[in-house]
Image 1 (cartoon, one colour):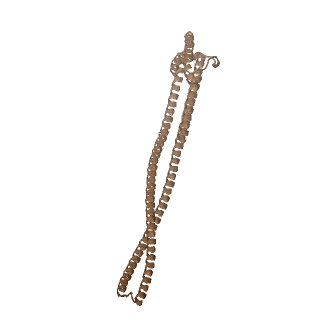
Image 2: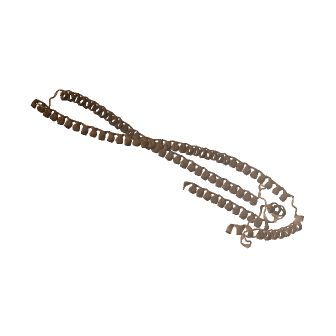
Image 3: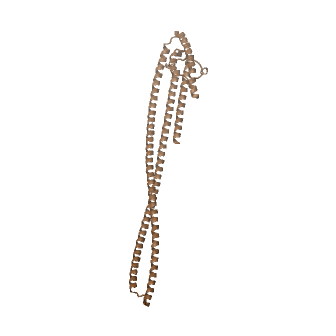
Length: 364
């Protein structure tokens, strides 16, 4: 949006400069027509105002030299007031041109400064956005890292509990097996010494059955405990597998966030480099405009000095020509006046023909 705005401002400045140039051209054309009318002795209302080409000025000045005596008289100090007024208008025109160019250069400089400020503001905003994005990524990485540490701690604790339960189950199983073996050996020895025919043998047999039933009850209890421990072991395995999957997913997310951070850094560096290049280019343009402005001002000053010197030379030449004219040259002057009138008519016809195209181009 700012680029379009700057383009519109540049277009407006170009239109202003074109308007100033056309106004100055119109003033020059009016001044030249006024000079022709002054030389011919006509009123301004009798002739249509048209723009005049620059290449016919020198020929008209030479052809109208003989008519200056009849229309203008030299002043007391030998200077022509018409020429003085004309050169004064030239000076005013040049001063107006200088002012217009100075205004254009100031507008261009102001526009360049605005562009530089806008570029600096864009760079600052992008740097702030990059810092905020970087801080957000750092916070996210920190949060994910904390979750990963917590998950690793939980996995470590669950693995430790699982191993402890497993070791205790194995120890209980070994103790139960040892007790069972000892009971079986004792039972075998008792069976060898028992006498089943006697009452004491029957009594011992009943005691033995009772002992075996008690041992069976203990074995069932131990088997249930073993089954519970196996179920817990399966649950611990499932939990460890789930925690391992969560750790893998979190590590992938951390890697993705780091890649995004690296890509953001590269993009920020690239944009910063482009903005620095544009800033350097705009600075060079401003310096070139300042240098051009100083050179144009110096050139216009030199042109004004040269025009002033030419004006003094032309005034001296007119004074000498006016002094050299005698009373016997009236007929020659009249002939020259008539020739000047004819030449003026042809020039006006030529101006009418040549002014059609510029007027059409301006209206279009």
